Length: 116
Image 1 (tube, helix red, strand yellow):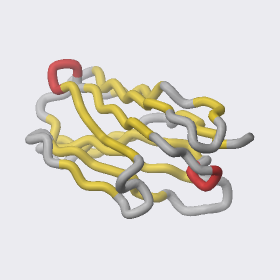
Image 2 (cartoon, rainbow, N blue to C red):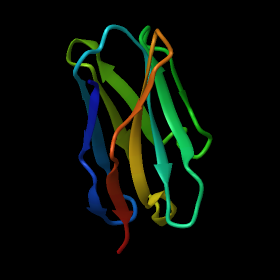
Image 3 (tube, helix red, strand yellow):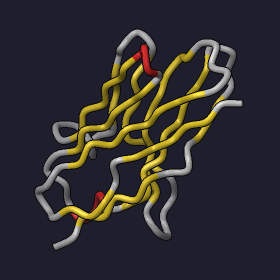
């Protein structure tokens, strides 16, 4: 059974930074990509950034220049460094993993609140 556990969320002032982590464990045979999504109250889930097993990254326009996705392949862990945070970044941030066999797994999410 595969499990994704996010951590690193919290309350931060506008302009501040947070680093989110997502660790995958269990019967992981081969990861194709890992990524981050977010969901604010009353809004649809929104893609933030993705990193492939080869290290290729892609991110949403709202994240470019402020958020950086990275990974530790040996630990099956993906990170999201978030800088210059804005109140509109407030959301539950969720980790997603896709395996080479096409299976998709989600974490439970970690709350990020940007407020003064």
